[in-house]
Image (cartoon, rainbow, N blue to C red; front, top):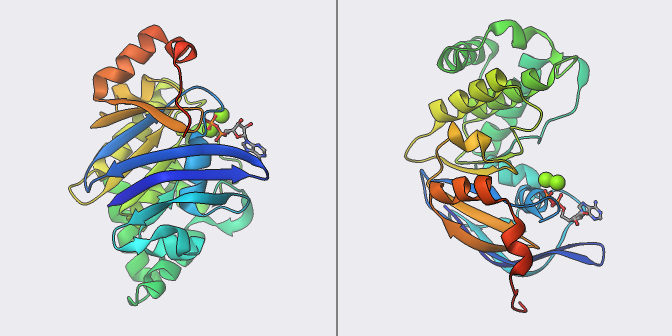
Length: 252
Ligand code: ADP
Ligand code: MG
Ligand code: MG
């Protein structure tokens, strides 16, 4: 699904990712944890094709495509989703209208028929039911006046409608109370399936109590320094990231 090899990326002349490798197979959930400033968000942004990052070395294969050669819209059309991709408030633009435009742009790029408003509404109702969300989200402006929890729920809703093959969630848990956290996790769990993979980026272990990852990786100073199963997240919760300070990092 996703194969990252020796990825080096910089912002200006500062190297942030320093030889990162990761292999995500269909249906797997990988958690990326690590201290602040490790490069977790940079990884998500580079994969989504955000501006401002230069890849100087390495490769990223997404299914059959060379991901780094694709424009951001092409990445989305190929099935990549980065939560926070649409974080902005767009007052006056109806959430439903916006989502339909995003979905139809994606369908068009894939050579699929666009959905008319009846078809889209039907799809939306199904997704709301799966996620146990109220349809109140639909009628408001995009993120307009949404609380933190509502924004996150809306991201999960976008995810459900766009049906990506690989979803990257960056700190989806930050600032959420426990109910909002559980509702986001329930949404993600409802969308897990054998063909869909997730990269769950989080500083804290808390979210992983509710979204059980198959693999946990520790990202520090631009590289993955440790990988393991869910138990690794629990160890980090107990011992923190202090163990990283004593590590001798080999030159990449
Ligand atoms: P994390 O998400 O793990 O906290 P980030 O990927 O946000 O880490 O940041 C990694 C490093 O890149 C940090 O040292 C941060 O200061 C730096 N950085 C992030 N964004 C920028 C930017 N736009 N310009 C310069 N440095 C940046
Ligand atoms: Mg940070
Ligand atoms: Mg971050």
